[in-house]
Amino acid sequence: LRDFEDELLALGDGVARVHGLDNGLALTPPMGWLSWERFRCNVDCVNDPDNCISEKLFMKMADLIVSEGYKDVGYEYVNIDDCWLAKERDPKTLRLMADPDRFPHGMKALADYVHSKGLKLGIYEDFGTKTCGGYPGSEYYLELDAQTFADWGIDYLKLDGCYSDPHQYDQVYPPMAEWLKLTGKDITFSCEYPLYSRGAGLTVNYTRLAATCNLARNNGDIQDSWSSLSSVIE
Image (cartoon, rainbow, N blue to C red; front, side, top):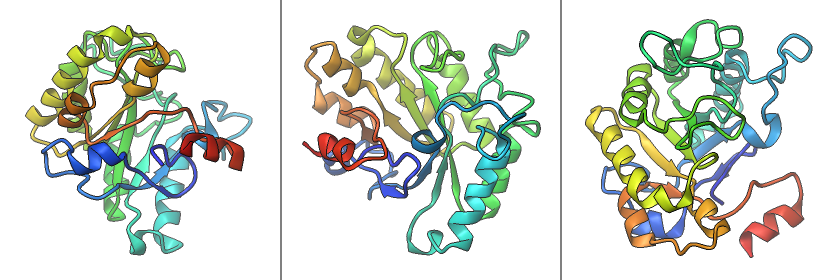
């Protein structure tokens, strides 16, 4: 199961786990919680404050992972998916910014809170010009974004592949792995691109992928149904 989404599921790809990126991370399948399956891209914090993508939601989930005993059995990640971003980069620094209304204290403060619980914070970005939800992507900004995530204290990066050319993946995902390494911060690297490569009819070079990514994804999102789960297994 690659995407643990809203459910508390183990993450891991067999190839990446056995022959994975040699950065000392994800030596066993990472375990934690990710917002997408349940909360999607709900940004309406005015009418739905308890279910929108906001710092409040992720702080609550961190609290629950500890209070309900999940941390004690190995769940350690609180992972943010799409739609956390502001609509534009900072006009002066070009750095990514969290939405100021939904994350008023910023990502560094959220990471500090999650770390204070003995947990780790994951984040989402996209290699393309935009994320799947239409927010600023990392194309042309890989080095800057890697350093930004490190400065915030991010522990895990899920890099998606919307609004990009699948023919570029073998050339661009390895540099992102290097930029993450050069920050000096341990950041687990989760790559989405096999899903998009296979969708475009391309052959995935799993040897190259395994040297680049701690985890990889081959299939679509898991929904709230056995048929969805079984289709991913198949």
